Image (cartoon, rainbow over all chains, first blue to last red):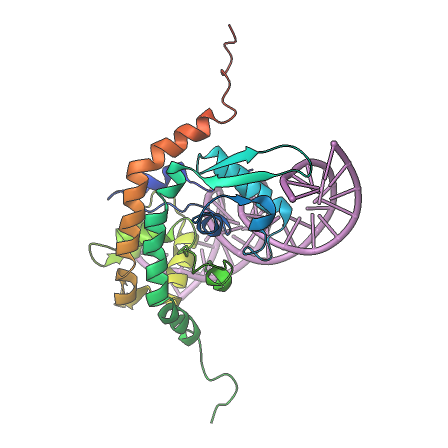
Length: 126
Length: 126
DNA sequence: CCGTATCCGACGCGATACTG
DNA sequence: CAGTATCGCGTCGGATACGG
């Protein structure tokens, strides 16, 4: 597994620390899905429609490694494993909320700009 | 060029919009470097030590496409081109500050967790 | 000075199939 | 249920060299 966190990210710009990215396509979503309490492996696959078990495992492992989530194996059969946000993981909710708010407010604008860029009339010249 | 923004990012999780990532390794740094005013192409290479012109161009172009920066070519020789944060780009500074604050407060903790994970004694058993 | 052209390696992510 | 094993593709980003 790799490190979605760049250690140089905070020194690369002379001015001040630049924002991190918690990393990857799924990490933020998983954090949000764990916001309201512990979830089992299989439960996460529902809101995270489209994630494969391999990727879910990978992502969860790296989050565990970084101390963002805790993994609890209750053993027995059928297996039962729960993932939960750690205290550290919960501290991410605030900055993430700020990002969500930005997106809600300004993402359409960005998408419009993207469409307009090089967006000559599709096929109707005159 | 590609799209670092995942359009599904806001619908993939059932609960609510999940945080975006503005994308890539350099975009956030560039935003911060433009925070205090317009900068010329060559000026950005200084604080962004290590970026290649190709990547800088690519990143700036995609930011321009997304309406985050404006590009002004003053013409003449030697060439003189300035990049500046747009109004939309400036709205990113707030959420980015929240992320910076998080990193300043908690990144060491995360790094410690990462080291501790699988971090048996490096080579001194007894 | 401000880029572009070409090549290329590494990683993120997904599809599919299999197991304790 | 909760994963693991393999395989492969697309993209990001870097090295290097050249052009207006």
